[in-house]
Length: 282
Image (cartoon, rainbow, N blue to C red; front, side, top):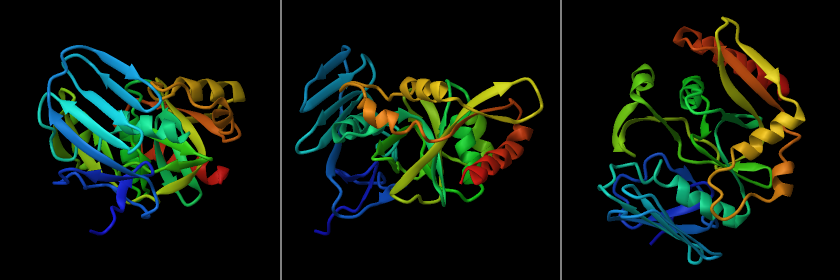
């Protein structure tokens, strides 16, 4: 049998039942660690959080439970309803894979990112700041999306997640996203994006914000604000927080607060401004 060479976040993913789950995965070399991924039709009857150095079991009553083993690396996902095709690539994979990434020593951030020839540029913000819509708009310019929801950064480089962005119904039609199904209790629409390199240098990030003025403003963030956002965006630190030395190593990367009107007609102009800032920083 040929080796598994597709995956995400620097892990080759060996699905017990591949089916359609391989859509949008990243091409990797055969030397990256392999992770077995499977799911079971099971209900989570109570919240659970069991954590040690070799195994994590984490679940929410009435929702999903993730069982992650360190060696050999494996992920078992208990779901109350059979997952729709593609959900085991994203988003059901992200919590479990973030644990494996933390065991690897990565900084894990709740953020997305897009790729330019210079590297990966993170996109962060509070809930409903428009992160996925921004990534979809950038991808429409032909730029790869490095990650939609989880950034795993090792030695200053981002391991690419699946080549896709998931959108809500109110934005999906604008970008021609296809209906994925009901995931996490809500409908999701998937937009496949241009393939990213499997590992991309981390170059900087944007904090998305709204304001009530027509201008699109990109304000550089001072060091203190950059550090605050990096700590704030830590992705579910079930196995502890990222190594402070690794987190601090990201501080020299530039960052901007991108404020724009909450108006779809400003989308393309906003992307223009983002790409101008990136070009100037490169």
